[in-house]
Image 1 (cartoon, helix red, strand yellow):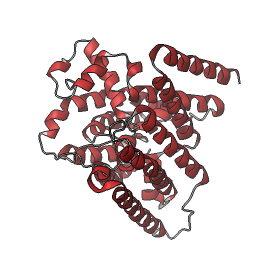
Image 2 (cartoon, one colour):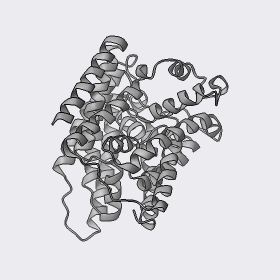
Image 3 (cartoon, helix red, strand yellow):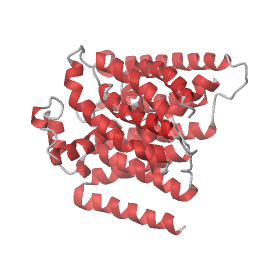
Image 4 (tube, helix red, strand yellow):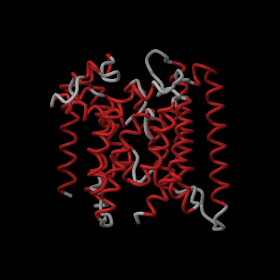
Length: 363
């Protein structure tokens, strides 16, 4: 009990610090991040686990919860984007070779590492050793992926496509719900092949989906941009690399862009994604202080090595794919980006391979 109240005091002081010395927006985003971390950890809402359970157990409950999340987030996000096109931005990424390869690799790596971007954050906050060790490697991979992104995009890309802009609000919502319904039917059909009667719905996951969707929408309203994770990781590593004179951002295609160059020069507390990431860690740590849920089975040295390599690949591939399950799938699809749908297809194909690799190494 003392630890819980001590943590609550620390987090409250940090929120006040942000409010007083940084901005009201950053303080609010930290609290949104805490809410996300608490829900993700409390409900054990795993994007990675939901996909793996569908593939291995023919259990569609996790995927159905994710579809509900996307449906609710889209119902709020798309009208907001249509009403405030200059104040709010969608999570748009260009369909490209880098997207195809990045999403495929990410889908495999997240199954091996047992976590996507948000999963790595909240499991690190829960004190799970592998995810804690993966976090800095994820950041390093994200930075290197951003540093190499210009080369990858030269392989081929087209301009980002936003459904709200291209087909209007009603068209965007209609196409989005049609896509979600088709995925739901496919997941339902896949679950029936097991021959075992399973519930398609998990109460805790469904509650988690509703709360995460609402918090994601709140993030969009406060930040002016959709919820993301990967950019913050890459920025942290980029700042360290710049401080050590290990790279020159002025000569890099990604980090020389005005918005990224500014982020490198400013305090990390001013970065919208970073402050939400810190909040997710804090929210998960709060859950850990209450439930002590961070225990995991000990890993062999081989499992550690494979897991850490997968963690690095998570960071690198997510940058090539313009996001992870959060930035590309949740935020991309809910704000009408075509790249989010491409990401889902490729990442699921990667997961089909990843679960087999995971099983081979005995995770």
